[in-house]
Image 1 (tube, rainbow, N blue to C red):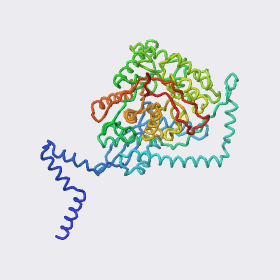
Image 2: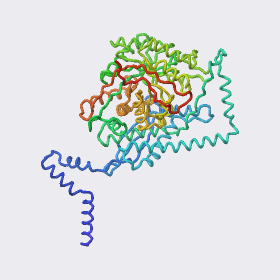
Image 3: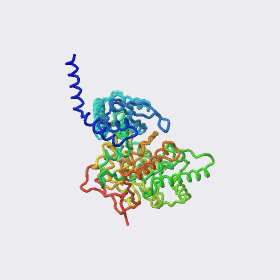
Image 4: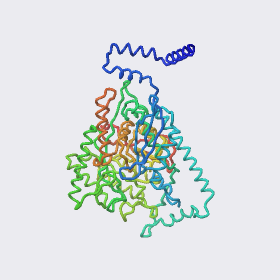
Length: 581
């Protein structure tokens, strides 16, 4: 019996010695004697927590919630193993709109039944709870790059299998389905307007979308949730963790991080095909503050413009003015000039000056207003324009409205001939930006592809299968080429403040919020002001001022027609950060 006791004592002594418990205990006890802390055990816990194993991914849970429009969205909860116990570390919710848009575009005309948004939500919940738990279990939470690479590899494997299945079905054919070539002939035969006039040029056909895994939003929401969990474990704000772990920004002094706050923008008008009135061309109109304003000053003045716009519209309307899901006003307009004129009126009524204090951005989403039967863009009900003609519309509008300095998705991805011509014509006056609808899937967007498709920058967002690492990589590539990175939250939106931290942490140039009249929007706006205040009051951060908007005379050179290969020379484009005297 005594021998067994002695063996246990020796094993215990070896165990504690191997983990250096006695010497560390002696060190803290000696130190505390002179420190004389009020909370002795709190000081012990603080000391020993520095030697604790880094928290690892334990499991994730998915559940269905509602987005800001009342549609199904997905919530991801990340649990980590912290000090030998599994603990809930973060929750992030995300809209399914981006995934649904891809599914609808991918299955259009296929004859297959399109899954409902509830079915897509169920698929995401299953993948968060089962697949991702098995893939990520045991990975340190602070290793965001490894987490995101594991997520991307998993989705790639699934989507490759889907592509093979689709290819096999296509080769085998179906006796009950009309062959694909016949559907193509129908489109070609019907490419006439109501008046019987054919389109000016052959219309480039819509490029097929990649096979996307149903439930792919689980990749994006889990990536952001893991980043948030890692930040919470380190007792850091999310933007700091993202800046430290994902960006390549160097600090001029060790331990001091240079942070440049993104310029805030707010949507004040919502249009598009679903809005009242004939005007289809402008999907969203957003106002942008002067970049060298503080976040607080900029948000206050943009909010003032939004309130002035509401008063003007209310005075002109016999009944209340409706709003879209982003909170932007939705008056009935028939012409492009109407929303531009009334927003300029609101800016002036706020005591601010367009082109000096407040600027205007337009989201076109050209792919949504293109009529493939007619082969033209329906910019307003009954008004059709070819790709060349719509470029003339933009040139004319920009010459008459110099306050418009940003235009997003003005053409389809397939209009490769007109895109460089538009950039060359207006890039001295306006940033021409493309989202994933133009640039291609963000997760596979490479530096070579950025160089091949000339533009002023890219609009990035969460959703689908895009991870935080994907967004960081794209932002870094854009900054290396002096181009603009604009972050916007996923369409459809969900109440999630983390998007603001994402914009600051990645170093985005502009962050587009919805109108300051909805809870999810005001929470993010308030978070931006809070982050700026935190940076100013913390010695480990150094706030960098952004230069004024200037437009150097640099025109993007044309890319090789129909090519997305790397050009011989890195292209130039308007530089958001450039200083021009």
